Structures are given as C-alpha cells and as structure tokens.
Image (cartoon, rainbow, N blue to C red; front, side):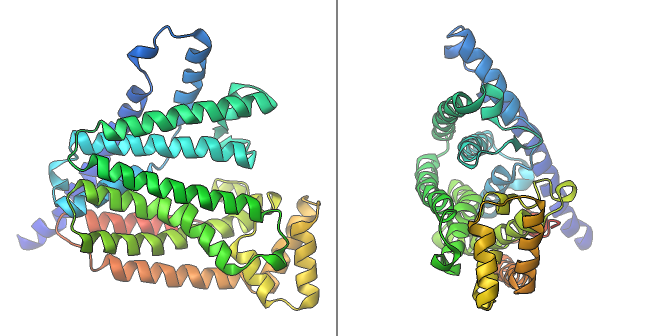
Length: 356
C-alpha cells in the first residue's frame, strides 16, 4: 500500500500539470480578446488576429510550468489542482515572454519563430513591420502586467515587482549580447559571455518563474534561495546547450537554424573558450571568421572546425555537465511529497539534454 501511495503522488502531480497546461492555452486565447477594444479600428483588429495566431503557436510553455512548480513546492497543494489565480498569473507570465520574443525577433532580425514567421514579418514588410511589431510588443507587455496584477493572489504585487526587476536585468543582458556582436574576440571575455547567459537566460527563464511561483505560494526565504540556486545552475546548462545548438545544431533535430549564432556573429561561450585555448594563428583565424563579412556555408564549416579544434566544444560540454550536477544537488534538497520536485527534475533534464 505504501509503495502504491508514494508512486501515485507524482502521477497526480503530472495530471494536475497537464490539466493546467490545457487551461493555459484557453486563457491565453481569452486574454487577447478585450471588450473595450471591440470596434476600436479594423487595422488594429487585424493586428490582434496576427498576435493571437503568433502567441498560440505550439510551444513548451516552460516558464508558466516552472511558475506553477515553484508555487507547488511552496504550497504543497499541487495534487488538488492549480488555483485559478495561479493559473491567471502564469498566463500573464507567458504573455510577458511573448512580448520578449516579439522584441527579440526585431532586434535579431529573425525570420521565423515557433515554426512560423516572426510577428514583424506578418504585420508588414521591412522597417514598417518591425516598427509595428515593437508597438504590438509594448501592448503585450502592458497586458501581461495587467493580468499578473489582477490575478487576485495576496502576493501578486510582490511577485510582479520581482518579475519586473528581472526583466530590467534581462534587458541589460540583451544589450550586452547585441553590443558584443560587433566587438573583436580579443576584447570579449569568457566572463562576459557567462554574464549574458545568466542575465538573458538563467535568471529570466529559470530563476524568475520558480521564485515568483514560490512567492505566490507563500514560500519562506530559504526555499526562495534554493530555487534561485537550482534555477541559475540549470539555466546556465540550458544556455550553454543552446550555444552549442546555435553553432553546431542540425536544423531538423534542433528546431532552430544550425549555425544561426555564427551568422549573427554572436560571441558565445564555445567561441571564447576556443579563443582562449588557441595559439596565435588559431586566434587570428577565429577573429577573421567572427569579425569578417563572410557568413556562408563554407565559413560556417570553418568556424565549427576551429571551435572544435581548440577545445571550445568540449569545454562547453564540461561546463554543461558541471552545471547540471550542481542543479541536481540543490534539487535533491527541495521539499518532496507533492510530486513537484520530481516534475521539476524531469523538466530540467529534458531541457538540458536537447539534441545539438
């Protein structure tokens, strides 16, 4: 009897998360249809059709899932289902992420997102489409904050303030990422690449939803500190894996353009790890590849060969493994009994083992 009862807890938690994810999709669709905008203007109505199509494309919804997991670890109530207020806050968080994606696609001049055209490509051609997408992104940001603050939870204001602070730091990371792309490799440090990974991915994508969710569940500071540590370590592993995919990934397997980071000239950890290990001739070749104008298939193959030759790929994998182990050590200390810890373990394992 004890074995059956223990094994059924993760199953009930998994069922609760699956139910939440279905409800999340419905909530996202409803949150982007507002009575006070009906009949406002046909042009705006068309823009909202494009936005809803963009926002509702199939996606992992990792951040709202992490938020619910953080809430469950703090409240120990996941088996009863996800309360309406927590679900609403999670939907607001997903809208906040949608805003980030829209603006990032404009900044990166991305062509696609989640299997379809980037929003700025659907709104209009060229600069006009980019300008319109920035405005729609601003709209989604306002709607996201509105939804989170309206969730009716006692700690919603504090969790929202926390998220806004993280978003400020994410903007710093995005600024550095874009600015470093025009800098010579000799003037970029490994520390800077790790800072970008921490600000853009680890804190925003992992730490923030876990901690904000735990805040909504009334967590004490020790649990918040544990979730921050596990989020930082897992988030770094995720971003480093993404760096490998961005340079070495197979389009069909990875779900993103293989070599896209090279095409955009990004100064990622594998590149700088190779540069610090290379001899003078190797550094000159890396510098020429990443600061030159050639971005064709031949240059990509040369870039991959140089990064591999000088140990950048292996060094990145070693740090992924080390960060994953660090995340698991903290994870094992988290509260058990609700099934949330097991769910978090499985989710982070899947995210840090993506094919490259």
